[in-house]
Image: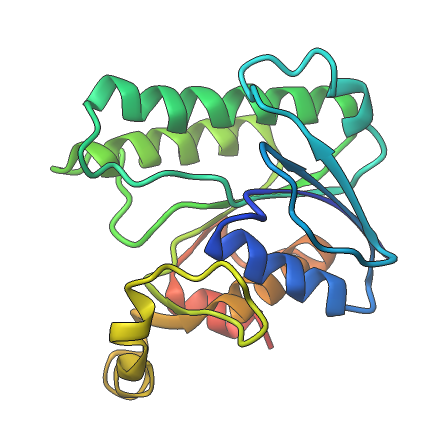
Length: 216
């Protein structure tokens, strides 16, 4: 089996790292990225669609057909956002895209990046929104895989790395040794997505230790 992947969020740190894992992997035969702005990267496996409004997919939905996996890495921080706005750009946007993808493909894998601490019944508003999104995706796809990474080390070839990482990146080997349940690499996230799509996963919700194990 070979994977044909649609990937969102490839101009962000997590999405770019996942994209590099896909381009390097022999069992991924093509990747179509959908971005609001150009990626600025060329590769024989790579196709790109520029589309500004993920709430209106009418023009691009026909091009979503013919793929057996979606790696949804698009997301925003809840810091400074009103709860309603965060729900709109997290739950509503993700489900709008997921439903369009599901309409165009039979039994695809859908891998979604959430975050450690996600819980629809949790105390934090962001965790409840992310948890509701996870549960909606599980209802929509038989092969939904929800990834809950914690602290992630970028891939060395990445161009889009959050500025804070240059101040805290040195903590990665310490965190990996002392807190293995909270630290992984973005490459491991990408490899785990590929392996889940190819071979399945033991459960739909994947915490850091599950992600690391599935990346092997």
